[in-house]
Image (cartoon, rainbow, N blue to C red; front, top):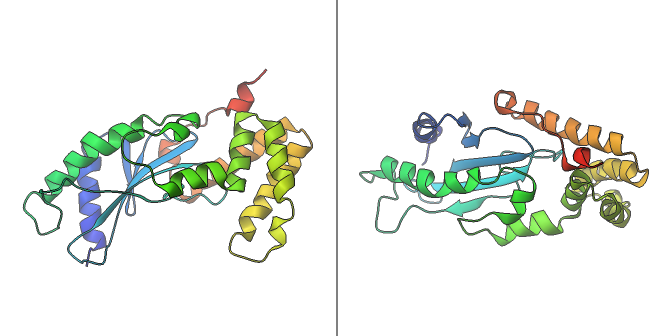
Length: 222
């Protein structure tokens, strides 16, 4: 079984080589954190000798955000090389893969807009679907970009969805909170709520050391 100790040692090895990485549990998190969470994680698989590797991107102003971002996008070590804990050169292969393929891709994602243009590793259907089609996230993004008319349209569409008792109900309750401010045209309140959500995420995930409070595009509009 892949152990927490194995995961931590491997992540620490990479973090020690880069000033913009911190370790939080099974995650490497990239600094600085402005509006976009970028991370790498290691998890167990069905084979005790074979860990799974993932990269993650998500918006930090999500009231239910996690270090997994929008989803878990898997990446693999090169074919023909070490892939198992017991393989000679396994640590070196992981470090090389992360440094040559994953970190350059994640470092290019600097802004909210960059989340829509991730290039490098293949993006999963789940990533694009959550980002582009999940209504609460559509509302978050439209509001952050200052597209308040589009945000209001989404808010109107989902205003009663919180009445359905399922595991997504809390997300729609929070979406309604933002939607009401959008519908009222209260730009200052929208901005304040997005910052509140973001700062709550940063505190919950112990990321204050890498957090840089940054204006949303909405705030920079005339």
